Length: 254
Image 1: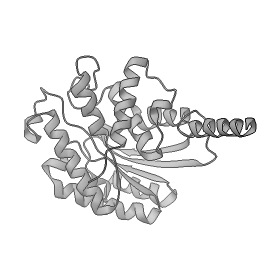
Image 2: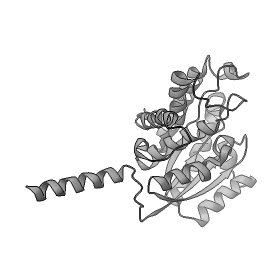
Image 3: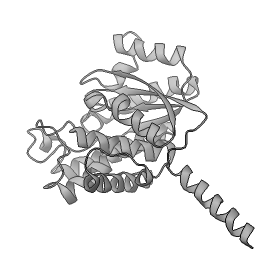
Image 4: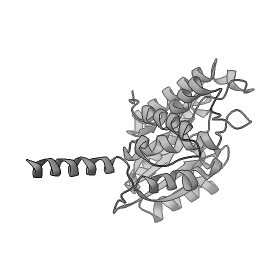
């Protein structure tokens, strides 16, 4: 009986490690990020997401092709400078995951352009053999000059974005990183205590980019970020961010 109990304790401890205790994976995962400033701000892929993965015990190599204000149709065009960069990355490297992020209002202002960009890039990703993720962005902060062009409120814009991302994901059999839902969760419940936005009211602050990275870790690798010993400087704030990221990763694509 003692041997059985000891075995079960060891087994349970091993299961806990798999959910984020820092034991290194043998495999190195290669990830390509394609997007604009909502991806590149604070150098999120390399300086927040990659170290977070390391703390979770996951080896990653991160590549990124980003350009401010770019739309996915540009990145899908091999005649475009940055589109050619995307093609070069996919041609010369074997990726495990590719993450696509559309310009922040495009899924609302021109849904068909958004979907065309997703479809064209999805074909290239499929040829590479990588798994495709769509990185859903968020509604602009209340007070943004253009907010009411895309929704009646931050919540309404976030809802419209999420619906468009889910439609596009369904068409190409992709998964969604619901960063927009995570941002909305924290914004609605803690906007007086946690600042997720830069002073322009649409780009993410360092804290907002950390929340995005938390949501990516949960969604891409299925890791419970609440168990990962990574801090952005405030344990109280990180507890809220990690819970919101975990909740968003449980959001079902419809």
